[in-house]
Each structure stands twice: as structure tokens, then as C-alpha cells.
Length: 430
Image 1 (cartoon, rainbow, N blue to C red):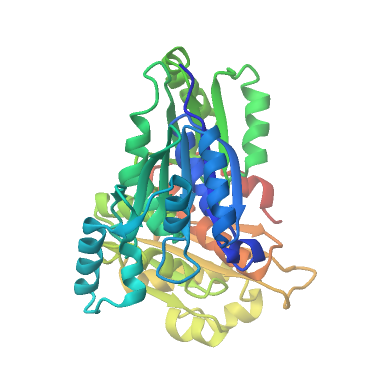
Image 2 (tube, helix red, strand yellow):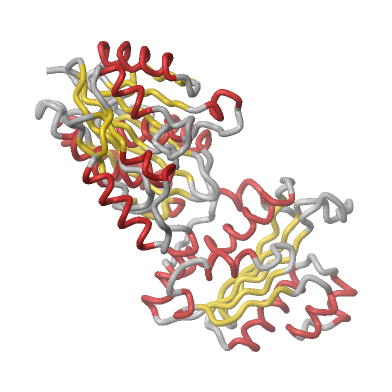
């Protein structure tokens, strides 16, 4: 048996005008690909009842599964329920379960039911609902022209929850047992897609065709996916994953088993497991490293204080960096970040430290220290390490990347890594 044919219908004037960028279809495609399914057709339609009705019928005739995204809200331009009823030539009626959901949703927020909201309970007669624990609008599930139709909200986090908690499980039941898909996802830091591909081409030129490699670029982590679509390929995937791990080394942060964790979370987990603490001394990143840490629940177990010493005077006042040292070597120097690191350790009593000072731009560079120059110090009071990198990026990207590198260097220290990161090899500045 073949895999079910999946098609996608998106609705909304804001999608057609460009007021909203479509990210939902990419989310849906990614989720379905993990089931071994691909979207064969995607159509975007404005909020027009006739167009929507006709398109629902055309897509349903050609698909086994149709996912409709958007148009379930309370306003007059939310037309999905009406279009679906017209396509099926059935009446709209108040749905008891949808009303119960909306009533509970309003009560939880201390809001009263009003006429626009009640529109979300008027659904095609006899349809099933898809629960939405994050929003007011339930999803709709019907079967029409031998096609299973799932209507989903346009709000991205509501859509994602509905996919993960309801729709994927339902679709999985429709996939023949002979079809098999397994996906392994790895978090990687410090290597881009092209770098990973180049390393694999050079070191693993015989990579098997039945183990599909995929990449999802992000900031700061890259996701590398290994996908197999049959049992035979799955049998030797572990061997090739091991070979991949040997090539990428400690650039691999972790294998993603469930919800991906941030780089900061990985560092905090290591610190907490070892009963250790960390402090931060920041200049050019302006507190971003500390913010990345404290964004994570439980950060207080390993992080008590950070220091944003943006001016030279504050480096001296808060971190006891000698003014004469800054005058001699400059704020962006090895001597200064070492002094910042020691000062932060002394003031906080922490076990580990990250200290950074650099030229974020777009102004302030010189021939000796061009824009993008940054010194980092990391480690413990008895084992401080330093590196100078040159990363001529935009100010925002520079700060994000420097902050992430600082966390990664500590992560490597905590796992006793002896491998030199590729970002040091490529960007070290002498």
C-alpha cells in the first residue's frame, strides 16, 4: 500500500497581502515528514467563501488527508466552518462539545460569552471536534469525498499543540504498517549546514542513500536529522550515526528525544548535576549570557550573579580591573578579560566564569582591533582559558553568537572536551 496523499489549504487575507508570513505550512510539513508523509500540494486562498468551498472540494477529491489551516476565529472573515459545510452540502449547527469548550475557556479567564465568540461553536452538522487546550476555537474533523479533513487554527502555538496531541496520532493510524519511518535529531553548535555537509563528503563519502540527512538551521543550534523509511535502513542507522558522531565530535550537543533544550539549559544541567555554580562578566554582550541562563527554570541552582560592566569605569569599580591595565592593554584584550573573570569569581564565589569584551560595531573598530573582535575568558580561578575571535557580523548577530560561544566553551569544559571547536579554528584572531 502507498502512503496517504496529503494536501494543505491555508486561508487568510493577511497571508495573501504579506501582512503575515506563512510559517504554519512549514511546521505542518516538518511534523508530517517525521511520519514519513509529504505534502503533495499546498494552496493559499483569501477569505472568500466561494473560492474556499470550491478549493475544499477539489483538494478533497485528490487527497486522502486534507489539512485546512486558519479561518476558525470569531470574526466575519473566518469562513472555514461555513465553507466546509457548503462543500459537504450540510447545515451549520451549534456543537455541544464546542460550546462546552468555549464556556470553560471563558470561565477560566473571567470573560463572558458574546455573540462573536459563539460563532466558534457553530460547526458543520455531525462533525467531530479536535480539542484546543490553548485557544478558544476547537478544530474540526470530518470525512468528505473519501478524504479525512482536519481544520486547524491559524495561531501557530495552537496549531503545533493540536498537531502533536491529536492530529499526528490520528493520521498515524492511517499509515500502512508496511511503511516505516524513524527520525533521529541531533543538536549541533559551531558548524553550519555547508560545513557539516563538507565534512561528511570528505570523511564519509560512502554515506548510504537510504539514510536521509536533513538540516534545519537555527540560531544558535543547527539540527541534523537522520531519517530512515524502511526496516532495512533502520538496522544499520545506529552504525552510521556513530560514524557521524565521530566526525562532528563535541560539536554535537545532544540527541533530541522530546522537546529540544537550549544551549543554556544544557550548561545549567551539567552544572547542577555536578553541584557547581557559574558567574558571568559581560561587556559587549550587555547581559545576554546571563539572560540566556536565567530564561531557564531552575537557573538559580547554578547561577547567582552576573556583572554587566559596559564602561571601563565599571570594570574597575565592580570587578576591580586595574585602570592602569585597561589603559595599557585596552578594554578588548586578553589581560582585561582575565581580570574581569577573576573579579567576577572573587565577587560571586562561583566555581566557573565566562568573561567577554569585544567590538560589536558598527563603530569603534581599529586596525589592530577591527569590528567583530572579541576576547573571551572561561573556566575556573585556577584554570582560566582565553581566545580571541574575529566575527564581523551585524551587532545583534555578533552578540548572540559571542554569548552562545561563551556557553559552549563552558559546556565543553564541563564534559572535559579536548577537541578544538571549529569556530575557534576558523575565527581565531592573531
